[in-house]
Length: 248
Ligand SMILES: C[S@@+](CC[C@H](N)C(=O)[O-])C[C@H]1O[C@@H](n2cnc3c(N)ncnc32)[C@H](O)[C@@H]1O
Image 1 (tube, rainbow, N blue to C red):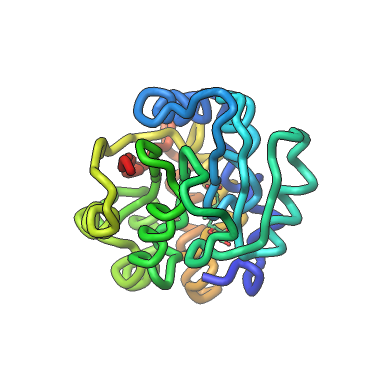
Image 2: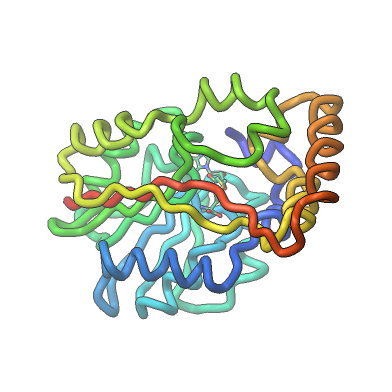
């Protein structure tokens, strides 16, 4: 999906903030399964507004190249990120502006379903990784259970068309010469309570919600707000995310 053609970049961080403990949790998974040594090079592929770019650089004392084709998303990232360990480049995952065997970790968060040529991207990951380097990927999949379904049924055909089945992700990286090392389904909190979830959702910074009709979106928000009004205070809202690690 072309994020420059959508009205998502300026609200993305507000709508998709990761609580500090959620961010620490994802960094701990990287450390457990794909730890880059200090001084390593990491690509944050499809970095968007850089939600993970600076945390990866600081946590692992690494150099991070954030790569994304959207100038609007990169503009947000450049405004926010302070670290001189991080650089951003405008490019697509299908043609990485990076030399062969020069990277220790390719981190991909929520971009896999946007790729036009996912098989080609898996091959690009293998090309740029040193032997023993990792791809670490977090993405929703077709099998994922996430709370938006019950309020916005209009997203179902888009999800069915665009989200990859779990098995497809594994197959593409294996075909590109990477060895599967980890696959887990992680349940993460996306909001502290339903009111907070309704607020984040109302910002519509989601590639599925941005493409349903305004009427469907309004009906879904009304249903979600009604649910939030009677949900127990402090009930966290969670969703599943698939976590894959492959070794070059
Ligand atoms: C849902 S955002 C995820 C951003 C970031 N990784 C995060 O987790 O916050 C998806 C990002 O993928 C980017 N994207 C779409 N197609 C891409 C491609 N072919 N190569 C690299 N990035 C792509 C979009 O521009 C967008 O910034």
